[in-house]
Image 1 (cartoon, each protein chain N blue to C red):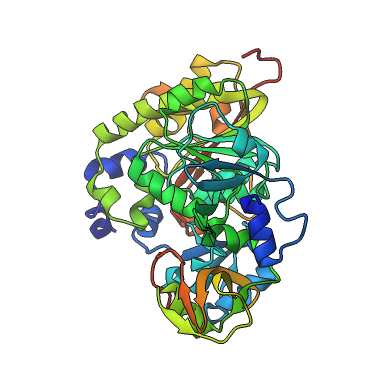
Image 2 (cartoon, each protein chain N blue to C red):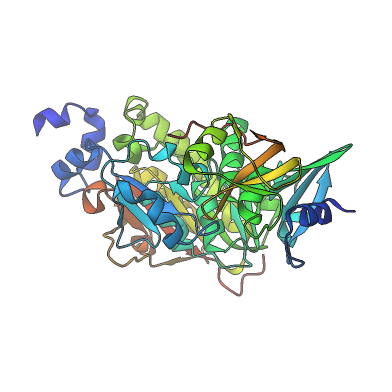
Length: 136
Length: 314
């Protein structure tokens, strides 16, 4: 199963997810972008599009930034949090929450937005969101 | 007013009161703090979804820029959830003008020759609805880190980030780009409102150094344009050596280049100069525009819109 198929299945994303986009894998990281971005070869770029996921021997970890953009249609393995919990997770904390999802990587949503990726091990949700700057 | 003048180098005042008739107003505006402005990142959300998150800041739309808002008290805007989620981008209003003038379309191939930290790159990605290609280039590795961070946060799928000499890159992409943005490194006189650092560093010698670099970049950008393609050359500085003289240099090297008029509804811009300290510039340069801080309560900027004719072979 390709990393894209894995993510689509895990998060219940539609068949047409990522339609019109292409991916490229470099050093166990899958990048996603427009076809023009993925095929660009005039010079060697430092970065193409967004990092979609990292491939580990026994798991695939989606990235927060890709899922913020591309994960809003997810229907599975998504945990909804309130504003206070969202800020706690963004600031690097964990929250305890009872959720009807599988253990492992989950999408964390607040209102209609995906705020990032976390690891759920019932009942603890741990943030995998990159540290940026504190959110008040 | 004499007191205000004392805060600026004598040579700075001597140079710029020659062509800014309301010079005292200009100096006053240069010392007034900038309003906080942000734009909504339409790649991630619609304004109706974002505005409720910022209601307590009471944002007011800017009449001349779609999706841009100003807030009276912008302290803490960068610590809002909406900012973390990449739903907004804090960007000075005048800095949003060059991409609007360039008007890149979905599917275009765009070269952003001096892209870091990515304000205009990410704005263009939104204008292009995340389609096509933006080649975002810069030389400084430290600034490129910031650019990549902004591309990530804003969710840009149509950006490649490169670290190349602008002149070499222009040659490698010769005659292939639909649009080019040369938002050139400059002496940043226009940013004095934001940081006094620009004033502390100010010198005529510095201006001459930047002018040399800018002349190379504008020619590289022009070479990268396909026939019929358009380029914006912009700076956040006032010095004519970094603005009109750079465009004049391009016209000398490529006499066929066309200077197009620059206009924006509800936004005051002044015509560029046709002469400066003994040098006369081609009359077409008057179509370029100067943005002065007292006119729209922004930073100072310079914007030129340049077109490569259809019948140019390279």
